Amino acid sequence: MKILFILFPLILMLPAVAAPENAARSVLIKSEPLLKKTMGRNLTVYGSVMPSTGATENISFPRAGQIARLYVSAGQIVKRGQALLELSTDPNAAALYHQAETTAVFARGELKRIEDLTSHQLATQSQLAAARKTLQDAEANLAAQKNIGAGVAAQKVTASFDGVVSQLTAQQGDRVAAGAFVMQLSRAGQLRATLGIEPEDIAHLRLGMQVEVYSVFGDQTPVLSRLLQIHGALNPLTHLVDIEVELQAGGLLTGMPVRGVIALDKHESWVVPRSAVLRDEQGSFLFQIKGRHAVRVPVTIDVESADSLAVSGALDGSLNVVVSGNYELQDGMMVRESNP
Image (cartoon, rainbow, N blue to C red; front, side, top):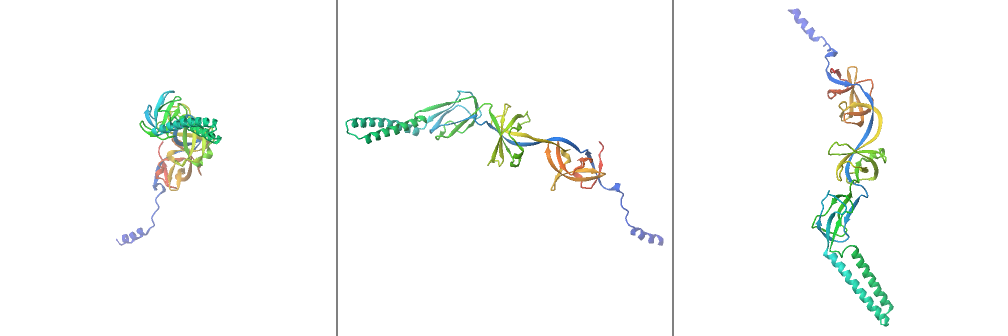
């Protein structure tokens, strides 16, 4: 019994034996070879469809009036000669016309009277010149009133070409001021898309580049177009730089929000599945397998596609990339591969 009591403390004092390596924690992962592929870098931008420059007609009136009849609505397709609206001249504008007409009649009579007096040497040449100037001014004022249509009680406006009512700012019964914009008519089939890009992306663009334009409401076949114009200032509403592309027939309508895809360039890159790349406060990274251990590699995402990413960084082309189970990994952690 004394021998047992002596051996027990000695056993407690022996150093602990390290656990074998295969007993250490490992993570079940799936990996794939690191591949190089040629990928194109795309720039995706958003905007809306608008009528082409020069393909619109803004309807306004040089005199005040009231919309007596409105025959169309916003977005309506119209034919050449179709009635759009009818304007009644404002009573004050009509009164100015009649006043100008009366003044001209009086000035003609006064000039005739002065001419008669002058022929009998009862009026001077200066009085005659003044009468002529008064008539000239009166007739010019009357002509100006006629030009703005102040002498017309009502005016009907018709479409001058086949198109669509792209904007409408007044309703039937509204009073409109002289020169106020009432309606915009756009020619059918002549459209453009205005898209907004970040200022730093301007350097990658050039006029004539192909742009694929999609409606944001679906994944229909894109409308192929060309880059026509790059603006030189920020849009104050979007804080982006506007670019314009011409649209051909393709089912897009004025005012429709669209997405544009511009192919910038193509180059060979390391390409990995989207699931391989993770992100944290230090940035984007992935894991490669060296031996039986995970190696964290910081990467930069250069190009994105639907299911893969083109990345750059200190990658080793001879090592596999972890594509599943990487959320559990830390740098240097042991891994075991799942069965294919």
